Length: 307
Image 1: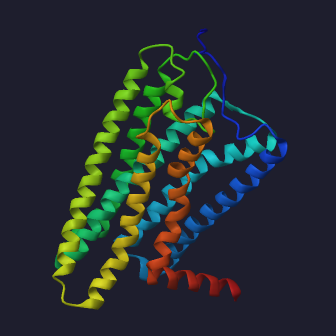
Image 2: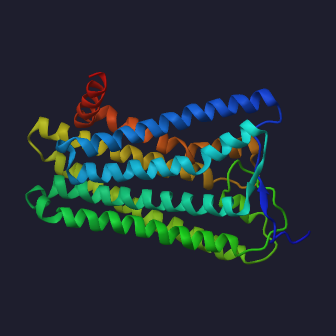
């Protein structure tokens, strides 16, 4: 097979070769994108404008909304553009950018969820020292470490992926997904990125175990809490976070921990939508449905809009 290292573009998987279905895909993705962007922007604006929400928990939630906003913007606009223009192409630099920013936002997302679990642990299990531990400077340092971790994570994976030589430029996915890119490799250098992916899953698994242990301690503390109102209030802040963690982890496992060669292109697309688009789309709704403070802040925003 020819060496295509110098290729200027990749060809992505198209949803359909029928023009009517391509237009339908465009409008479906447009609706999903606008919903995700609107939901996350409302969370950001609500937290920024309502001084009652200027607490560590909501500061981290605002950061999560920023990450989800970036994550959903990595692949959907390009997929919409290709469907509208009846195209399959993405430039080499565009593919590099997709991989970099997907891992930047994805890695930062999981690191932030780990920090948020620690915040809930301190608030519920060690409330008397909460303000001492989770003070303003500490929160900014944690947020900065999350973004730095995501950036380093993205640099490693992007460098490991595009150091390889390619024998084809046809990616069997609607965006530049690393497992599909690695299938195009002509050399053994792809094993470097495979090793990085295994390391990532190991570290991610460690973070997930940390979150689970943290919540076991939280629930044990709540069971000893005599106040029913106190338990309900604590659960209202914990359950959305735990739901988001499970959504992110299990959709990722659903996509990656499966036989690589026994699924069709349609299933590959479906799995990718599950883990790449569903979490940033659903997170704002998960957090706003059970959280009275967020609901109140959003109602204030809508009331302000009617004035």
